Length: 193
Length: 193
DNA sequence: TTTATATTTGACCGTTCGTTCTAATTGGTT
DNA sequence: AACCAATTAGAACGAACGGTCAAATATAAA
Image 1: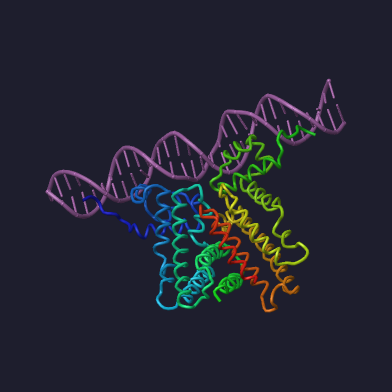
Image 2: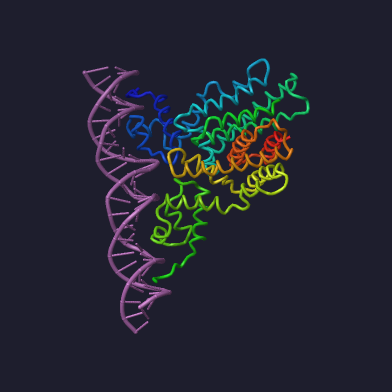
């Protein structure tokens, strides 16, 4: 009962996500958002709550709409190492095709808002933990399948790869030669040999 | 001729650096800075210029006062690989002792302000390029001295280490177990074997 | 001691911030 | 057709923003 919304909240949230992604949290004003989403001020507040709430929803959408997700890539059946390689290569591909150089929204959120913002901090850490866990189980599986020598430490390798991948997305905000990222990734993957 | 300053500009700039480091650019207001530095508004503007100019000066100070600098660590005479290891370990040490979890100010600046802010972007890229170059020459020296097999690619390895080190400083903003960083670093260093 | 110049203080500038409110509008339900 | 409730547009809110200014103050040079 009552008047129906004139806009699609999902599409509006996507627009908010793009703007936050590009500019970060503090540098994006509610007026910027209203202009970009093309809706009224009151509609924005009624639908998404305040600025911080909107940012959290945007960040959640960023992670949830990523397809395939890192976890999906890593849980492909069959040999595990190719999946790990595919994950690293997908990060490189994301980085070199990112012509606006927005980087990774999670990385941006982490650098800007951690540790002061508890909610964002929990969110980022949960995301990183999920990736580390998925990497650990993929590498454990690889070792069990004989793709990796028995003396390797899957958890340590997963931690290494997590750190490296976040570094990739950060450094890719610079205007550097794509070869820099390719070289770096090739070296990182050499620990799988 | 004229009245003398009542405060030490270097000490004041250090205070500004600490606040920007902790909170980032946008989230730090001039009023915050005035309160922290304990000087008057007009004194701040007269001495350092506007907010952006002050931030650039603070970031420059951050890099220049770091002792020993990455380049210094890497240009130690004698065997080169231990210097590379020492560099990585110094990043780990900085990360695990960073109880306020401010991370690296260059990383924070990169994530928050690149690529929109040209001046900061140039600054960050110059810093990263300097580290990559120093790593490349250290690894080249290592190869020439027989510390590294002849078929290794020093530049690619340097690029890898640069990315990894920036990732370390980013991930260290999370509240994760120090073991995560130690594990990651140990794996990264294993490419030197 | 006078003079010229830099610094300090604190009020003040216009703008923008995130948020709220009022009133008009709309559409599903009764 | 009447009503109710959600949505809308846009004015308005107080606070905070980055930055400037005039007057008072202090110092080194003349």
